[in-house]
Amino acid sequence: MPYLIDPDDLGSLFPNEPSYRADQLRSWLYEHPVLSADQMTNLPAHMRDEISDKLWPFSVETEQTADNGTTMKWLFRAPDGNAIEAVLMGYPKRNTLCISSQAGCALGCTFCATGQFGFDRHLEPGEIYAQVAYASAYLAASPLEGCPDHLTNIVYMGMGEPLANYARVRESLRRIIEVRGLGARSITVSTVGVVPGMLRLAEEPWQVTLAVSLHAADDELRSSLVPLNKRYPIAEVEAAAAKFFDAKGRRVSLEWTLIDGVNDTLEQARKLAPIAERLQSHVNVIALNPTPLSPDRPSRPERIESFMSELNRLGVNSTLRHMRGQDIDAACGQLRARSEPKRGSAQRVEIGKR
Ligand code: SAH
Ligand code: SF4
Image (cartoon, rainbow, N blue to C red):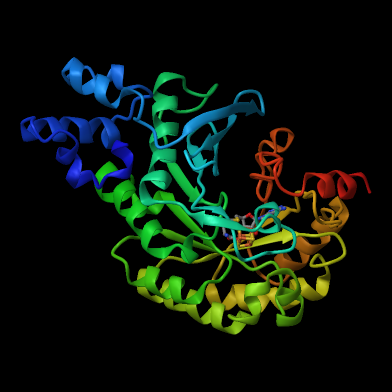
């Protein structure tokens, strides 16, 4: 399992080979990832053979495309049965990969499919990085229609709360930035407000972007959507975001999932405006992607429009993001929902029919 080994320790896989072989292997894993070990042309056949069936730390269970071939979703399966999902979104000038940092999530946000199914385990740094390597290898072999042939951006917005898996996520960032060489500025870490993790990330040497999933601008409403808010209320999250901005000189962005009749009111927009203003934040608005275990619905277009024009009137910059891959359950909060029939499937069917 070469991806599960520290990139500086790859020599341990081949103790009888000269050390430049480990460098060659590292280059195949980190600089020019390939889908199969046969493509590692400068390695001797016996080395390729030895790693060929254990190159990836997971098997590829399904690969789906949507949006005219510009969105790809992979469901990877770890040997212990856990699902790891990643979504690649291609645009004319960039390719953004959305990666998972945990199998499941323990934080239980009410509107999120990952949260609804609970926590299984943390992903290892190699399992996080391997999602990046796999998408890179895929793109090099078959670029998405009309999109670049390499990965340009990474967002930690798949399954899991990255800052609740801090040390492993940190190591995955180190591998992406320092070993692979992707610019830190092209990486976004999204958090629901794990304050200690935000403060630690502010101390790291990398200029990554931090996105805070706010969704509500007063503690009462936020605690009802995001249980972690009871532990780290809005004022503490805002203070940590401000520290991040101070330390990095990089504005934190705010994420807001609009739920019909819940957080799409003018009152919420008016409470959000001063927070966004103090942090000089851009607000990314997305309409809820409905999930099987919650009756919540996305806001209607006219409510989205009035919420956003109120922000605009109050001087806050916001963008409405469109969901990619809704038809393949690749959209935010949908990852894993349908991939694990083993839990709660009867319940899901019932509620889904309501
Ligand atoms: N745990 C982190 C990162 C993973 S979730 C976080 O919460 O930020 C990535 C984004 O998807 C978050 O902004 C989250 O609020 C959003 N999201 C979750 N469920 C969603 C849903 N059903 N519809 C739309 N966005 C959702
Ligand atoms: Fe976890 Fe993020 Fe989903 Fe909340 S929104 S349950 S923090 S993955």
